[in-house]
Image (tube, rainbow, N blue to C red; front, top):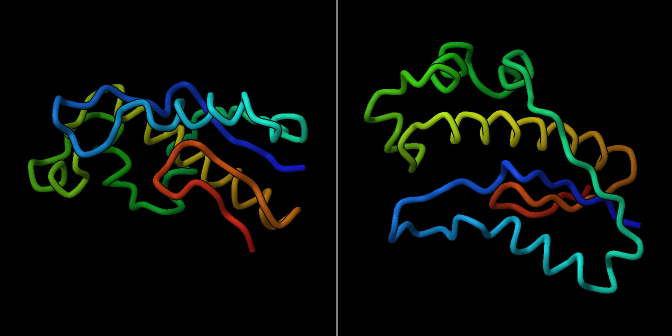
Length: 123
């Protein structure tokens, strides 16, 4: 049995010509749902993380900037995307994904997630 973590908010609109496919997470999830692996999968859809949970990995100033859209140009370039409400929402969902993934991995040693560049964790 494997746990899959996914959320419709993981896909975001990207500008034309962006190096990432904007629907890669849902595309992979849809492909796997049609596979034999679906029979033994448990699917989790996380809630959005709160600022305190995001603050586990980021300083409160950065969390506030993500939440309210006050990232400066340099921070947006480092992020690789222009700030938008959709991006902020995705970041908070992805942070919750990370927390859930770690909890599951510590408990059962493996899970699969569709929300970040790294698609699975195991210990």
